[in-house]
Image 1 (tube, one colour):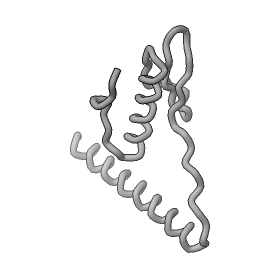
Image 2: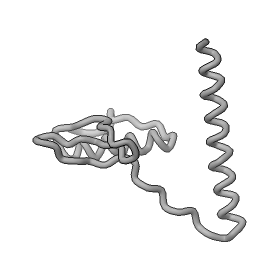
Image 3: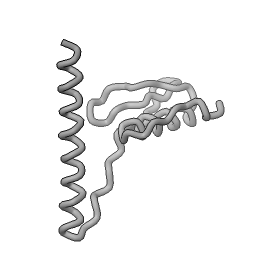
Image 4: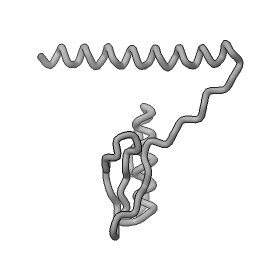
Amino acid sequence: MQSMLQQRAAGLLALRTRAIIATVELYAMIGKELPAQKIRYQVVTKGNAYHIVERSTGLTKGFRWTWKEAVNLAQVLEARADGIKLSLSGVRK
C-alpha cells in the first residue's frame, strides 16, 4: 500500500511541476511578468508568544517566544514550501 501512496505523491508532484512550467511559459508568451507570490505564513502575537499561522488554512504551524525567532521560522517555512531546504541551525539565539 505504501508504494501506491508514493507513486501517487510522485504523480501529483509531476503534475504540479508541469503546471508551474506551463504558467511560466504562458506569461513569457504574452510578454508579462509573473504575479508576485503571496505570503503563506504570518507571524501573529497571541499572549506572550508569537504564533506562525498558515494563511490559507488558519492553522498554527509553530510558535516562538521572541519576534526574531518567529520571523526566522516563518522564513524557513516559506523557503521549504518553495522547495528550498533550510534549517535554523545557523540562526543565533
